[in-house]
Image (cartoon, rainbow, N blue to C red; front, side, top):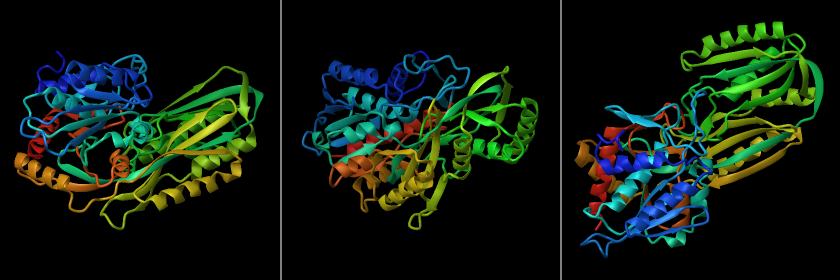
Length: 480
């Protein structure tokens, strides 16, 4: 704990650092789940783990709270794994390298995983501290939230007795979230045929875009690298002949892609490269005010034989990249400034006989989400492709008169002298899954100050974490 040892409360940040040492990207949950079970055994707490690696740890109420109604504390164990190009890390096997200054905790060259590791750390600190006043606690550590709330959807909600819940997967202690969007995943697997041709390969790599969370930042004007590639290649084909060898951009459906690579076959690499440099400079000038880090790399291979996608399919791929619906589709007419429906082309992936375009869809209305799936299916219908949908999770509807909302607002004002904002968000939260599985659940989502989640610029506010943790303790103390 030397790296963060100067920060208090030491238990919260100590547990957070311990969690960052454990590889825990989505789909890699065994070790961190076992860590939670070992923690429970060490502290003499009842715990269970299910087939999805979700963990529930139960702690009896403190003296005077034995008969109080239980409260659920909840956060997810997985993180989005993104890294800088030169970062020397294998997320499957390596922990993170984190550090702190006077204000923030960061990671060297990678995402930090404060989304949602800091929630797990706060829960562990509460479970370990026998000096606290609190009702019976059901601490729920879910898995694979970032790839479709897989753990929460698999959780047997009948195992929980609580009817009130604090989810800690938000990013600002000055905000209490009371509603969220539902969502789904949509993928079009487009078949391709190839033939070998002799010539050169020009490799164009777009990089350095801001990216971000496809719910939180979808309305911030961030440029999607996959769609930008479509624009550039569509312009190029107006004056140059080329074939597509591969297109690859993004690896998380719910992250706005920051980079995209195209490998193009050509018989005239010199003039094609010249036009690419000219046009990408024009694009860079256009978007520089919102994408200051935008840059491109262009390389030319030696002459050789390349497996090139057939012309007709290549034309369709460019058509889809140029015209695919993306970003904000509808704003809410009921909640001010809330994105109601959106989608994000987060993954573009080429394999030998298939190109996949995968979208993350979101909406606060089930019917709008269903229509968006229908719209995409119709859009891709001309490609005779395989369409796969899944990862559905329900929206979390606002509960008027929420006692949990009232309690947080009261304790936040006592702590800071100000009233928190009450908001609904467009991003998905596991609260929707829990609310659908536990009738009558009174739930809020809160969290410490964080910035840049799902990017290598992610940072966690030390002061914001302290504030949030102390407010949670005061809430628990008031829940008799």
